Length: 203
Image 1: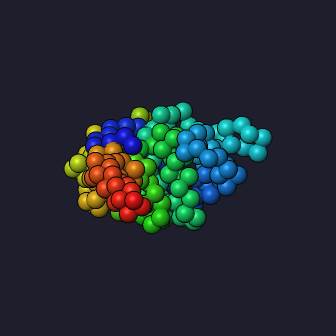
Image 2 (image 1 turned 135 degrees about the vertical axis):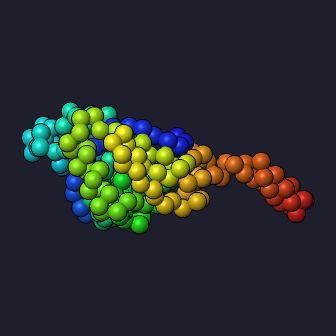
Image 3 (image 1 turned 30 degrees about the horizontal axis):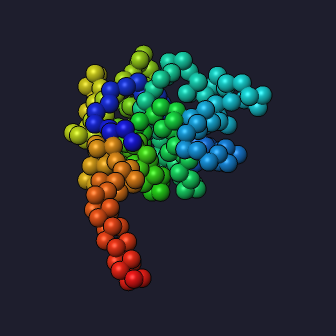
């Protein structure tokens, strides 16, 4: 998992509340066994018309937001089912941070384990960021996990809360496997002793 410290990047607006995980990654794409390759299916039903062409009315199809790494969304983002594929799709598409007033609890956990920083700000602050992203050309934000701040070059400044353990994991780039491997030497020692004890008992 790639460490996250401070990111300055283009921000894209998704001015919708209650965006559920079935819209983030529709169920027909959940048959894949890999954790990669989901980016092309992100918001598929919104990004594509019935004929499969890009929907020009969908925000993320606007050329102004190509390459955005920060997503600004409405409240209760990623509600619905608990599928971890939603975090995989956002990450694979290129988003490293999502800003919203509230997030679904299970998604909040899944996103952190996949290197995505979720920033909870007030509805008023998010409304200001959405307005800026819609009206200011090449609107960029700086999300500092170290300082727990969101800033721009137009005077916006906000702080956000983050669980200390989740912050540590994101700063160090540690997912569940990475956390386990930090204790690899101790695990090897335990296994060696366990194997030896089993051999002596059998003998």
